[in-house]
Picture (spheres, rainbow, N blue to C red):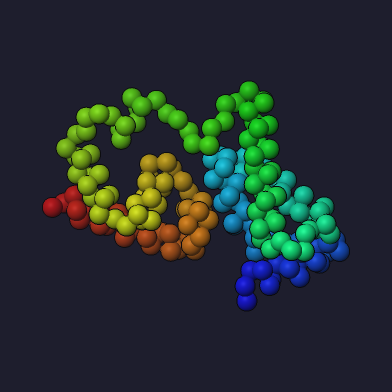
Length: 178
């Protein structure tokens, strides 16, 4: 069964104000919508707040959902709009918001012009990993993403993300040991 065939009847029940349908809708769609909010906001607290706002808006406007639009696409539009509103609100509150945090290049070991031999070996090792696994390792260990966020971002179960990370670390260790 596709997501669309599951979400369409659920949204019809949500339009009738059935809380059990809203709960099932949330369980089915929240990982994807949370991942979207997190990618935009880059802060779990803001992403959770935007997600709550999105589901409240979905609850209120389910009756008016355009029939020609896929349910998940409609929900993604709402979540994206809520995340962007949260970013603007956060900006208006005096906090500078950027989609990707810009750090002082002097503090970033990968941004320096000269690299130590150990860092050069590590970068060469990372180059041997597949693009997806390299991105996952960097997001996990360099940017500090949680396994849950990685699971949502890569659209993979959390145990799969853990396995990929463990295998990648073993490959890196073996490469650096030679």
